[in-house]
Amino acid sequence: MKLKLLKRSAERKLDAKRLRREGLIPAVCYSKGKVGENIAVDATEFKSFLRQVLPGRLPTTIFSLVDQGKERRVIIKDIQYNIINYDVISLDFEELHDNQHVNIKVPIESSGANECIGVKLGGVLRQVIRHVRVRCLPKDIPAFFTLDVTELQMSQSKRLSDIKWPETVRPLADLKEVAVVIVKR
Image (cartoon, rainbow, N blue to C red; front, side, top):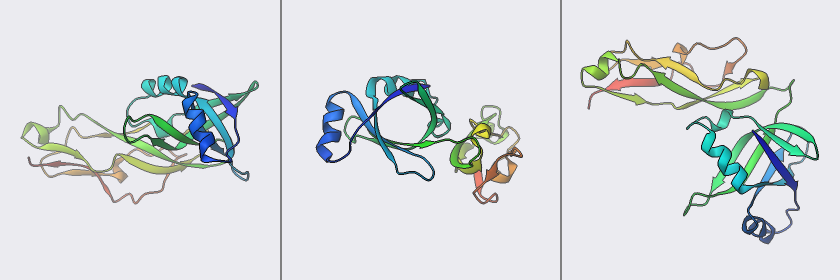
């Protein structure tokens, strides 16, 4: 997903408000060892990209910021919304470098919920942890992790240790934590 960026000055709060009126989103692009760079991206272009991203997968979506023919791969580290109309009012990007590890939140998805034995017996699948923090190189960023819950009975659970972790991804959470559980209604 490519976004055109505009460099901006961030001297006053009024500058950010002016950018929003012009249909831009003020943003900051952080890169390791450098001061954050103040930029702006087109609001309608960014909204159209947000509509394409599956729910929960924004933290693992890699964007390309284009500036005068140069592309920089980035991920979103923080996004702020207007509390009234949910428009995006501010973005923080982190630049990805091929040889530097990145800490990222990866979504956990449950598969087999419709065929789950505990759900068929009247239970409810409760997902306790929706994202897990991991450390990896940018080329190894997984889109999501899957937990198969088909065989779970009533009051049984799956932990983070039940995820099939790739060799190149290091979890930063305690693997003993419960990720999903079947509970009574």
